Image (cartoon, chains in turn blue, yellow):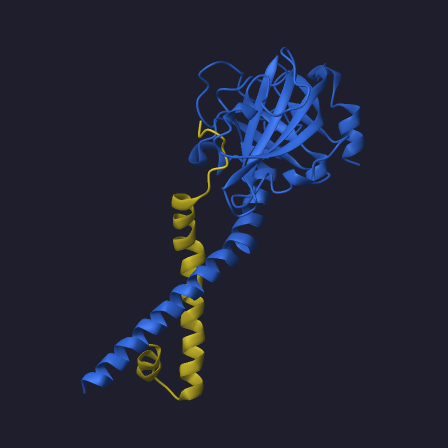
Length: 229
Length: 52
């Protein structure tokens, strides 16, 4: 009788463990095939909304200033290497709930604003929540990234990629640690994300340098239009 | 556990199997729409360098 009871208990325990395993597998399936594509689509749509031609529908980037609240959208990033029409909003701060999980790309509050002397540093998920920087490892020499703000377009060109530990915070310094030939007074863009994919053991860092700044009233940069064709 | 559930379901073997599939579908739907999003918001990775 006791043997039968313990056998039944073992069977229930086994079934519970198998169920737990199945739920974990389903979580991965949901993450990769359900959640990511939905979030990715939402973030792209959100970004496009800021550029609608109708003045009524058009949203305004908030002005860049100190103590901007977390999650405030002040710019947009265009990365043709990630997809011809890839664009994402940039929110202030790197808190997950206010910026990274909902807007996509976040600005390190300790770093500079776009176009300023020093380092304009960004973070985004490599996997999950739309994974805005999923393909950050594909950026290479010659690639350009455009930043659009209230009144300007900034063009940055690829410099270098590095894999670092999460504690190496100097990579977002004004003169980034690890960037070859980095100089005081340079204008840098740093993109950071997790490495490898599905892990946050390390960080992948991509550095870029400012090569052009133009006023918004001069229209969209020609090189960006070309890259999006 | 599952065999007890199977026995408790009404109908013949075919109908029981069908009900089991529907129940599994409902379970997956609940996981996908309610449970996983909540778990995700709690355990999401942090890609920031310094957590600013």
